[in-house]
Image (cartoon, rainbow, N blue to C red; front, side):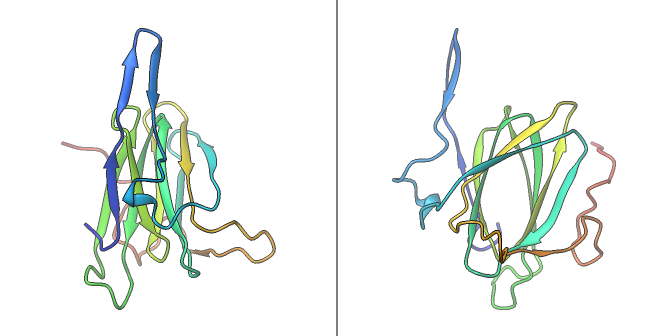
Length: 154
């Protein structure tokens, strides 16, 4: 696991009416420091939203309550004990987790399956519309060893 990346399985409380899942609690270590805001995005099947990173200390917390996503996190931090490591996670309705992502690692995701996916994020910094804290690379960059378009096999 990349240094400072954490995952927490989320408890699904299901009954005949549906289910309830807690996605944020102030007593969970993954949310330290606490989020400054939250948002959700809807992504159509097959769409890749990658790559980006933050340079002002932001930490992201990804949850996928609807659909499925493949999350990629790449560590190119020079001072990291896990420099040049890549982690991938498949989360969503079938695997309810929160992933804590150090913002200074490259990260992104792809909606997989055949339905749109909803991503909830709880970032620790407010979005600055006038001066966004985002550095970007194209999803198919050679700088990160993840091929989002690779065929599924097994």
